[in-house]
Image (cartoon, rainbow, N blue to C red; front, side, top):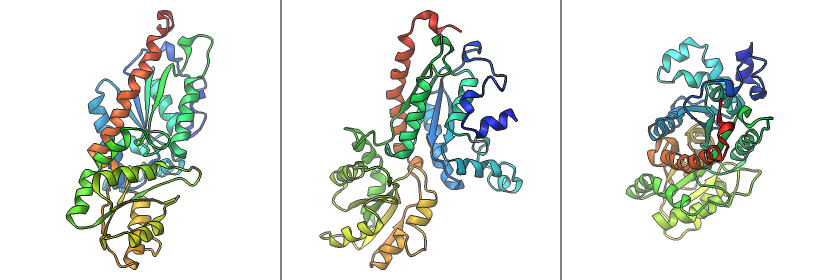
Length: 333
């Protein structure tokens, strides 16, 4: 029952005593850990975008144990059910066991801590600092501020969270340019076929994210005027992009639709590329455009995956500085 409780409950962080775990300071210290935090996906093909990021991170941080966490309860539940489906597993032998047993951020951090990691880097696999990133950062900050009588007993003494791909707020200098450079192969694909490049981001109905407008400007500076960026849950929506291209001077009558999302899951295959009348592909076809589709998440793009590697490299010395600033007696076990 203890293992099942840790795998499913929000009380994971506080379950060590009940499950008989030794306190952090009583365990042998092992390699530091990196936790890659994504919303997650149930799409088998899309999972490989996240696994590609993990491979890039492991290559860049060979001394770290790298974990994956999915923040979506529903997605984790589906993978846990699939773990007991022999037929599904037989058809999808390339899905590693860690995905079938995937944990949330609290569970995964608890496992990393139980494995002996004292220094833990949490890297957001989000594109912007929307609702998902904000909740993740709040969770990590709360764990970092847990107080114990002695610092050596702190369950998460050295922990921090890496920024999303485009940085914080409306995007940061250098981040937008680096992300635009990672999309060069996609822009070239659009050029070669004489198409406008139309990107679908997720967006957030709760937050005003001007970063998408700024990133559109950056992309146009790099690749010309016929690059457009809309979102699923905020302005500009798909129909807004159709109107914008209709009004644009000398705009192509062909578009290449591609996701600005780490995985090409349900939003990509249904909201963007689906046959329904509300999909972006259907709206553009109805407006008289020829439509090409690019069905691949950003995580499969090594250039984009390496953005998260760069954010981790920026985070590592900040978290390590917490350790160096402590008295030697507080670092003992």
